Length: 114
Image (tube, rainbow, N blue to C red; front, side, top):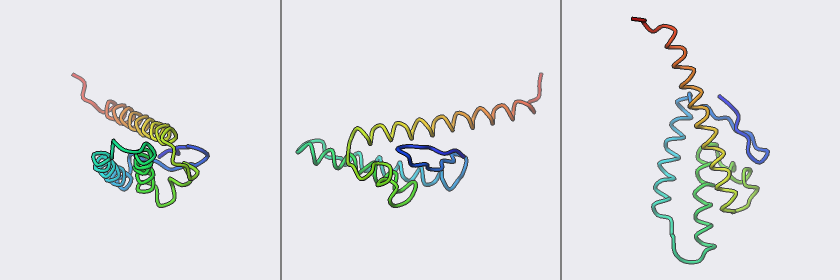
């Protein structure tokens, strides 16, 4: 478990916890579905709003209603969404790498040597 901090908001991420893993997997399945339906032509403002809405819904699904409001301070800004998402994914990946390293080290202690 670790705390991810973005824009003065701290959120608990635990990539070893099954409940968090399930929320994570479901949220990203929903994100993928929304991304496929994302309108890519038309008014720039409508495209940007739909793009931001994907990320707002992702964070609300992962951490609870109102999380995106706190993370983005109510702003629908594509740059902020990209930066926040990148920070979140980097944090999760770093945690997964640390977990795998720790697990490998633990199992290596008991490995039969030939």
